[in-house]
Length: 237
Ligand code: ADP
Ligand code: UDP
Image 1 (cartoon, protein in one colour):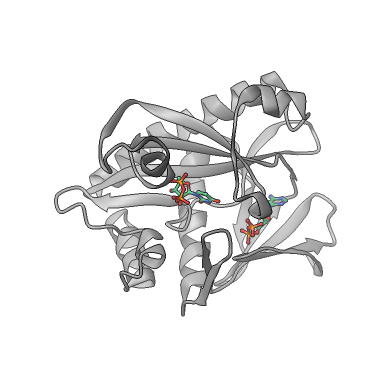
Image 2 (spheres, rainbow, N blue to C red):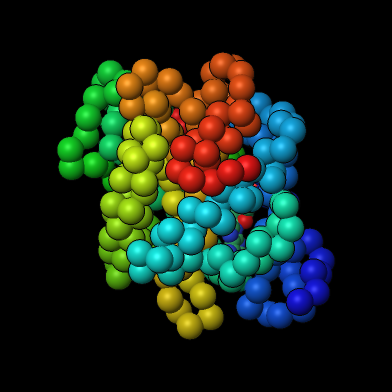
């Protein structure tokens, strides 16, 4: 496999074409962004940590029967993935209230959500990723009802795999965001990434934040915390 031209440079990752039409290279950079790109910093080793973390998690998800983009680790900061036509919505599942849910509804951080809540957001930085519902997704042709149903079911399935994994490491999976795409066969596949950049993880006892909120809130030790999360779930980085 030969790495080809740059296809897209996002806030934290760069996507490259390859000499195989159905494969891409995802490069995880050290860039860390928050507030729709308003705050951006380079954090040493974050690209490597997230690349390896993502690969590890995607393998667990795949083993549970959810199809993911991940093919192989290519280098410290690069993964080979299936090329997908990304659906421009973010699927957010919450086990505990935090972040935008608290701001929007005035509920207290940490309130248990049982059953978990599920929300869709439009992937659009300029509009600050507004919350949308199923009728927007269908009306604007971003996805079909069948695809919506599948994304939702797969997001709950991922929660049922990952919540116990993090619980074993003494952590609460507070919330997370997934992005799905469609492959050449028309199948819905989990794309993008699952790393502490796109989820919230708290120490179960102390409720210490171990995810990107450390960056958003200027708490320090961001990459060190990601490495601690990895260690607690059995991945040495
Ligand atoms: P953003 O676009 O939000 O700034 P990133 O820096 O993470 O995000 O850039 C990665 C981009 O690559 C995202 O837009 C994501 O939707 C897209 N992407 C992720 N996985 C795939 C894939 N398997 N095929 C095609 N595009 C992908
Ligand atoms: N999230 C993300 N990318 C986004 C928006 C949210 O990865 O563009 C993740 C975020 O890290 C958290 C979950 O989705 O784990 C829910 O985020 P929320 O809606 O609370 O927004 P936030 O306050 O984090 O911006």
